[in-house]
Image (cartoon, rainbow, N blue to C red):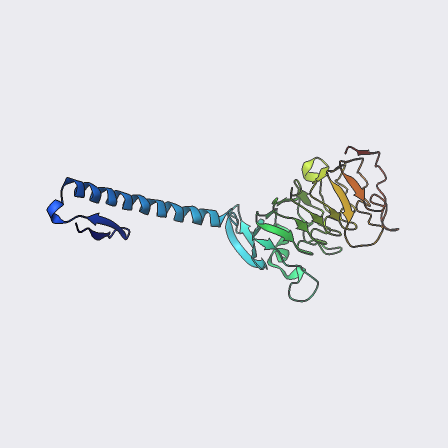
Length: 289
């Protein structure tokens, strides 16, 4: 008995036809079944295609109308957007994957020559989207004595849990920044990362350092006067810097600290030098671990 194969033009699948001598009701049913299977597999292929596109796209990279955009990492982009229709950049979204660039005072990536720096006076919100793993040096640093990120009434900053490192001076002197919770996968907080910021102001003065954080740089939270209550969920050790780390020097409104793990940092709450104060109102340090 000879069996002939025919191609289904819909999806390139084969169905089988028996010789004419025995082509009958069985053959018709086989054809119909093959066509049905072909349509079924076509539908599955289309569904998988759409699913893969949706998975790859992840979160939306920004909201609103893009006013300007700039590459800020090998695979990261900063989007300045208008979300209220006045054609002014009011939001900044950092989207993509991996680390952002480190910025300096000169060279290839200069902190005060970025698109967001020159538009900083109108920014009301900064969003670090999921996929970004590290915030580079001086990413949002405010210059000494300058009024770049500090002329506004307040800037809401949200940082995705994918961020594992906040580098040196990322938010230095960004006094109007209001932060939510620190990322729950955060491992390292660099020197002066939050120095002089409004951290705590977005959470009733409470800052919780997640258990995942193992190293904190010198003066990382110096002069954060909105901070009143501190919870340290893990064990903190010192990043490169001077022996007198003075991580919380000048946090003059800090009154209560709880430690679930441990502290391996010298002079953590002491003054760094003659220009700073110790945590003069600190009344309670409780070890709960």
